[in-house]
Image (cartoon, rainbow, N blue to C red; front, side):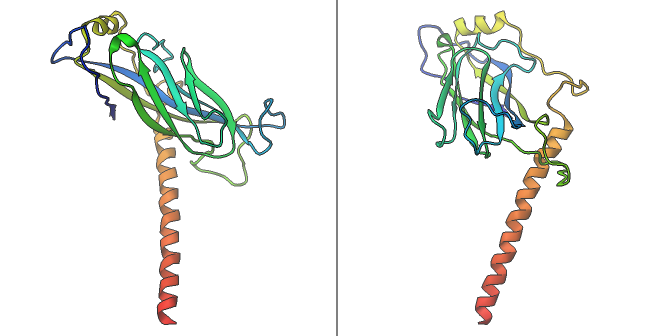
Length: 217
């Protein structure tokens, strides 16, 4: 999938017509189960510590075109809207449940581009081959990371020069042990979806049984 966004009204710098520039990013979260020692001020009911982030595929500095990233957390968090104005564009918190986080990427002023908004499902628990006899341990890190591309269509001349001054970031090979974008991660996401489908199917069957019982009565 390629992330798309709208450009703002043309400013003093002319747009480079019929041309687009792509910049890859990595976004997602990592999470670990909390041990007996919890971070200061962490509520007693919190079970995990997690970090959500936006970065280059190999941790490159992306602040030459990204000004800030705003993370909108669940309303139960104090100051739920968090703004990170310098790299690394990441946020670490504790919690007990999974939820959707709204991520807004704001570009540098010279880009004259509207911000990019999307959602990431915060993942805290393993979904793939879950063994009830082997519960998640504090040292077991969960990773939900995705690769995407931001396309700047007809960037203005000044921003175009800025983009050209730094070569596009490269996605590491899937053969690399350090690569987060693997078939295993893909399978884990598929398993999570399948678990959800099974739950919905089960609820449908229960509802059908109730309806049939009422009709017979």
